[in-house]
Structure formats: structure tokens, C-alpha cells
Length: 104
Image 1 (cartoon, one colour):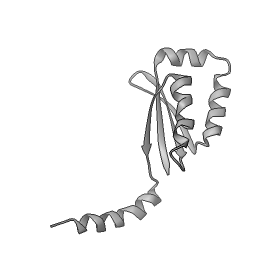
Image 2 (cartoon, helix red, strand yellow):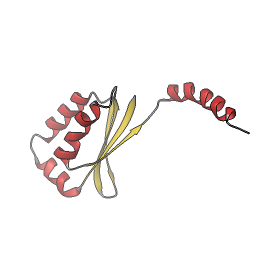
Image 3 (cartoon, rainbow, N blue to C red):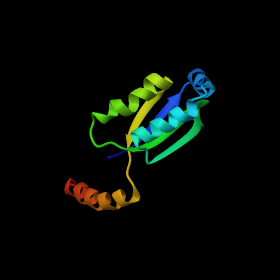
């Protein structure tokens, strides 16, 4: 299942990270390790934020993916299941049938 992983990095921790001459290499290695389908870097509420789209096959992968963000970046991490348009196209007809079956 695809997840959006959003890591909000506090300013102080982010400042230390970007001053590391190996920062870009480390972030690229992490992205390759987790096999991110997409990655984005942006600001939110004055903090650095990184977001990844990752296919997580089993729950035991969650600590492997998130722990470097928690301990390596001091990040606040969120995981959100996401779907593509194709997933939505498959799911909506079934959801309508289910919703209609519970109407009284």
C-alpha cells in the first residue's frame, strides 16, 4: 500500500543537517533505501518538511522507514495511506454499493 510520509524537521535540527557536507549524499541514500516513488522538499509553518511516497508492503517496514527520520533528523513524522486515481476509480463504485447497503 502506498503511503505519504511527511517529516517536519525543526529549524535547529534542519540547520545542523544542511551544514553537514554529506547531507545531500545521505538524503539521496535514504531515498534510494526506502525506494521512494516521489520525494518533495518544502516549508510548512516555518519548518523544513520532506515528503515521500513509499510503497509499504508490511507493517514491519514502518520502523525501518521512519526511525532515520525520528532519530537522524529529529523530525515529527506522519504516515498517511494514499491512493492513485486508478485506485480511486476501483474503490468508488464499491464504496457506493457498500454505502447504499446501510441505508434504511
